[in-house]
Length: 369
Image (tube, rainbow, N blue to C red; front, side):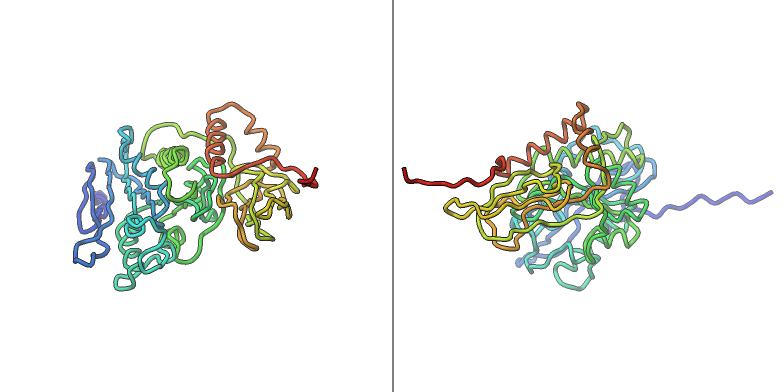
């Protein structure tokens, strides 16, 4: 008679020194620093655990303190009464960069970029210590990660997912999120998604909208995407909402200004563009057209600047070349499914930050009658 198998002992979940049992929802404060007065500075997070074991997923926002759309996503998830876990654990971190968030700034007080400081060290700089705390307590306790971002200042992004697609687990959650646009990229050294994935926690980065705002359509996109991933991993019940199409990018590039001037945009984020199509026209301060920037290849507008004044070399439009034909994408967007309506609503919203006008060839102007 063979001996009975010993029950598998699961590693207890301990965050910030607090042991969190199955079936409990616990708010935790992770101390990351102190004020000049010696008071604690902490990252606030909520840990939701099902009674049944399963994958642990983290959702983080505001690694850059001025990127508020992700904060809105996590906040909506915190207030979602329908978010009932069948199994597993969900770790929600509405603000990682608490210093930047409080000051409305992208970076930390020491001017370091937190998203180049991971995995951090226990006794390093302010940025390194903060990175170390979130990495040790959240990343190393998780099986998957979703990190929410926006574009940098004076830019906006059409919602897209980024990750190292060569990793099957990263590819799984990147596709499951339900974005039309997926960019294959591991991320730079020191970035959260790169280091988390390298440490064994497959992580994707979401880029959507612009800083200093909680944009309703972007928040809805993020909430829907997180729920899609949780459904795919079996943490919650439900049916995932699919996009009208989904494509990965074989290459992307920024189109840059050749001359200083004031731009009039002819496209908006998320728009399909064809080779040679006008992107933006550059005018002098007194209204003389100087040149028109055109698309060097067909693709989709991933992001744009929102400030129309430029100097030579400054970025204007982020264009991505897709793996599927534009004809197939245009056909998908001509439908009437819910995903199509959502995509159109998102593009329409983002267009409000862009002064889009129809492209016209310059005409001789005379003020003398």
